[in-house]
Image (tube, rainbow, N blue to C red; front, side, top):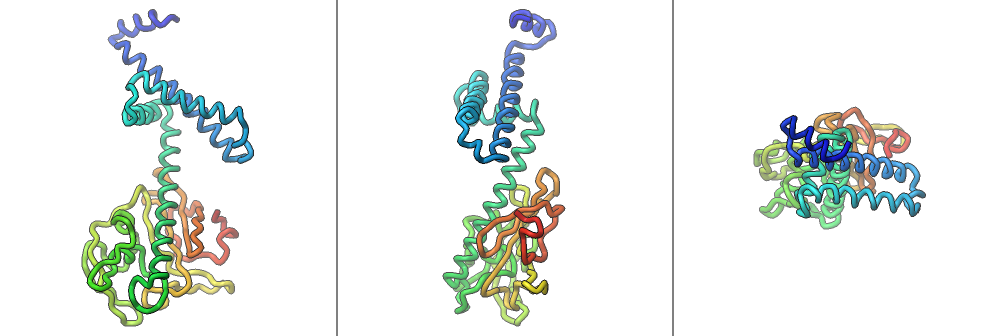
Amino acid sequence: MKTAAVLAILAAAGLQETDYKVEVAQKRIAAAMKELRELQKKVAADPKLADDAEISKRQKKLQDNLREFAVEIVGKDEKKIESFVLESLARFAPDILTEMKRELMETNAMTHLRTASLALLKFQAQDSDGNGVKDFWVADVSGLQRLVVSGKPLKLYRGDEFPLADAKPALPLDREEEFLAEDGSRLKFGKLGEHKPLQGYLFAVVPSFLDAGGKKVPFDSGNGRNKDRFALCAYPAEYGKPCKMTFVVDATGAVLGKDNGGSAVTVLPADLAKEGWK
C-alpha cells in the first residue's frame, strides 16, 4: 500500500501524519536495536568475532540507523535523540529496554565496589584513621565516609550516595553516634542521612570468610579492622526487578558475580571460582 493511501486511512481514523511517522521511526529503531543486541551477544560469546570486518561494519550501520531514525523525528538535539530511542524501545521492544537497564545497573554496582576497594586500600596505605596500624576498615561500608578523625569525617568516597546504600551500617546512618568496638575502643561517627539503595543495589561488608581448612573466621579482629584482608558485596535491593546478580570484591580488587538469590554474602568462600563466582 502506498504511503498516501496509508495516510488517507489514518486521517479517516482521526490520526495525524506525524503519528504515523513517529510509529514507523520507533518500530525501525526497535528492529535496529534488536539486531544490534544480537550481534553484540554473538561477539560476546565468541570474542574472535570482534575482528570480523563484516560484523563491525553492520554494527556501525545499525548504530547510525538508530540515530538517523530518531533525527528524522526530533532533530539533532542529543538529549531528545536519547529520549526518543528509549521511548521507542519502551513501546516496541520493552524486553530489550529492561535488559539494557539491568546491564547498566549491574555494571554500576561493580564499579561502585571497585571504587570502594580503592578507598579501603587508601585507608590502609595512609593509615587514615591514625591508629598507627596499616589496616582495613571492615565494620561497615559507610565508615570510610563518616568515621571522625581529628575532628573531621574521613570522606574517602566522592559523595554520600554510596555510603547511604550501606545495608548493614555499624551505626544508624541518620544519627551522629559513638561506635563501640568489641575490644572496648570508641570511635565517633558522623551523620550521613537516610538509607537508600544506589541504582537498584545495596552494599555491605562480608562479615566472615572460610580459611583454607574450611574454618569460618570473622574479618573484624575486634576493633572494626583487619590488617590483611576485607570483602564487600553488592546485591539487588529488589531481586529480579530487574537485577539478579550479586557481586563481591576483596583486597585483590577483582569483582566477581553470581546469582545468589538476591542475598548478601555473609561468608566469603575460600575458593570463589569453585563456588560459581566469575
